[in-house]
Image 1: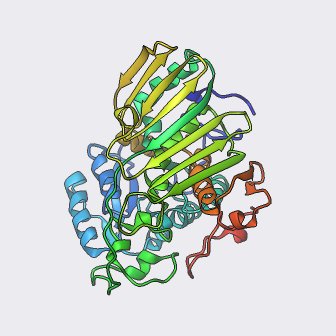
Image 2: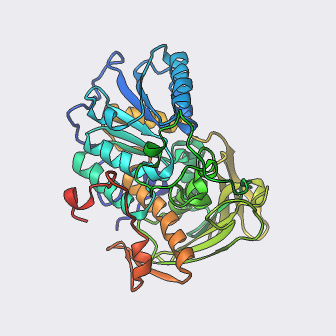
Image 3: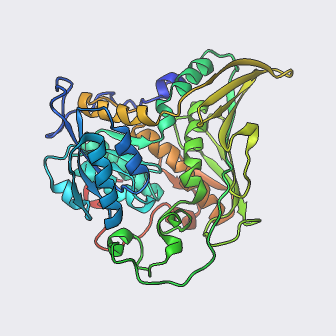
Amino acid sequence: MTHMTRRELLGVSLGGVATAVTTGPRSLTAAATVQEQIQLAVVGVRGVGRRHIQQLQGRPDVRVAAICDVDQKVLASAQETVQNVDGSTPVSVEDYRRLLDDKSIDALIVATPNHWHGPIGINAVQAEKDVYVENPCSHVFREGQVLVQAARRFRRVVQHGTPMRSSDVTARAAEVLDSGILGTVKMSKAWNCRRHNHPHSTPDSLPPKHVNYDMWLGPAPQRAFNTNRFHGHWTWCRDYGNGDIGSEGVHDLDLARWALGVQTHPERITAHGSRIDLAGEREFPDNMTVAYHYPEGKVLLYEERSWTPYGPYGFDSGNVFYGTEGMMVFSRRGYFQVYMGNQREEGPGMRGGTGQREHLDNFLDCVRTRQTTAAPPEVAHLSCGLVHLGEIAYRVGRVLDFDTTGEAFRYVEEANQMLKKQYRAPWAIPIRRLFDL
């Protein structure tokens, strides 16, 4: 595969995919004027989705035409936010499928719990909508494969919610890495050390009257409502979330993979985790380490401690990129610093932004120009794949060899079954009907 610089890897998809996406029926072209507003819908408006709405302040070329959430109280509050941002009153719906049927909607932002990211993102692309999918773009590995195929087949613009790919800090770090000052970067390490507190067990109950709980469950198995698996807590339940590695860790894994310059999945994965400190309800370990080995002979390490209030080099979330001549400490909190040789002499460094606003702007600009986003689905699948492969290796409890071309584990059927999942009717994604995977 042709070598690409880190600078080029910021926003360039893999496998020779062209940087321009052919326009579809509802797409806005580069010739569109400010008066031709992008009609945007936001699905999931409790937390990150509302932040995206607020970031649209000052963009007269974008209108939040619709918002979607299963919680009526959240919807009402978000509607006020939209009115404060652009003065308009959006359509409010519980069922996102109404947005897909609406020909006036150009693009969706998906900021739901993880188990909805793949189905909504894939179905939005099929409905010929452009889509910004929060991280991770897939709840299981298979969904990432289908999202890539869907985006290519329907020629849609897709952005993954890893905003540091649009940060000025990352752009400058790319220049430093590509200058060769560190020598050859052969290993990277990502860490996620944010402390969490979990509630103790509580009995199941009836869902609140203002919540459409059946719609919230969607493709997940039928299960009684419990506050410990709902707002603020679903991340640590496998039916809906991906644990710490899939909530915070995915950002750092994405950057660790980017710095290595690898453009495939790893060929060998080893993981270990346990429960040593945190009390309360969670289905994931409170510490985990994963080693990913790549065909190029490079290694990516991941370390997770969700019980400590501190992290290496003063950052709860970060990376170290190890070269043959020096290393770079990098954090998605908006920082990098180079250290050279045995004496740890300081080289180039920078403090700056985290790319939140710029990443959303990049998506909306690409909706207009039909160019490839900073975090297209091919890039998203490789990074989110690390979440799934690492978690599977932890659950299986053995070293796993992975076929990077066929995207399957070698000789371990138990692990291959974990690459996919069963969907509660009628929410299955159309794998075999539309795609030859």
